[in-house]
Length: 167
Image (cartoon, rainbow, N blue to C red; front, side, top):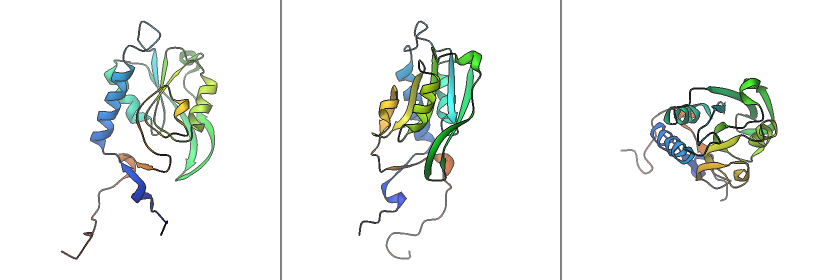
């Protein structure tokens, strides 16, 4: 039987793990900005990039934080990426000195769109899949293309029956 349920090829990320991985991303980015190693601003790709961007901004002491809202998913179905809220144009310019952060690059379509708007920005994600990792300048963990990542903001704790038996 080849019908694999999403959780069977899933990568479950806890809040603790996300925090550790986002801090690791910040450490990897430290000193790599164009302004004597510093970054002018962090821009989170909403919504998934908001938690990692906040952690990166804190770790690197970056006080200017903005968002770009790109919609490319409707639940688990991917569609054409489109910007529904852009960051402050005066801050962004061509992207020089800007660190754009997202939780994951999947196919790369979202980052491709944002990169077309800010070609000189540095793009960083916590997790990357092979099909999209060419759109990322820095990432922490690569997972297979067919892996579904379960992020902590998408999960709820609930009872799970034992694998075998009733006790």
